[in-house]
Image (cartoon, rainbow, N blue to C red; front, side):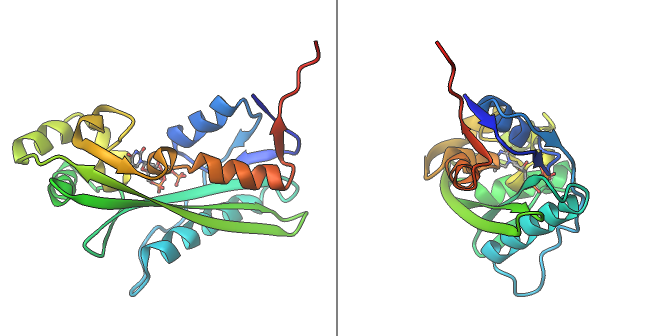
Length: 200
Ligand SMILES: Cc1cn([C@H]2C[C@H](O)[C@@H](COP(=O)(O)OP(=O)(O)OP(=O)(O)O)O2)c(=O)[nH]c1=O
């Protein structure tokens, strides 16, 4: 659907982010960026996801200075608390119960950068999600599937966790970890990618 016009690197371990790039038809390299994802005292969620997206992008940028790097970070926010990925099944259950029967937000920050061209762009996108009300038995049953362990807020809207979600407002792909409209807009703006034109 789209072609990569310039060398492109997805700085991510996330299979969801990789699948989104593959769906677009892009040619890209995947390089994981391991950075310290700790929240700093007094840091708000928007600042956190923008900082981590930049840190992940810059860690990979050093290795590919002539390439365009895309990195992202996703968190769930409820009651002023930031939920990242749970450490274990117990923490997953606690996170799920904190989200049950109410609204929370999912925020993804992303960074598009190229050292050779002196560009670094960051944006963040927020979506709202309403969970149905459920009890500890349901939270434990879902946590036991293992699906929550590598996901912010301990659920995957795109997977088994879909049954938790009553409704959403805003970008769906943002909840899954990469706000596609906004990322594609930046990649097209800098002519990193373009729609594919087939002859005949
Ligand atoms: C809320 C939600 C999050 N997630 C995922 C998106 C992200 O992969 C993950 C949040 O962790 P992140 O730290 O944003 O990303 P990651 O560790 O998976 O990958 P990397 O840092 O290497 O890019 O949660 C879902 O897949 N579905 C959901 O519904």
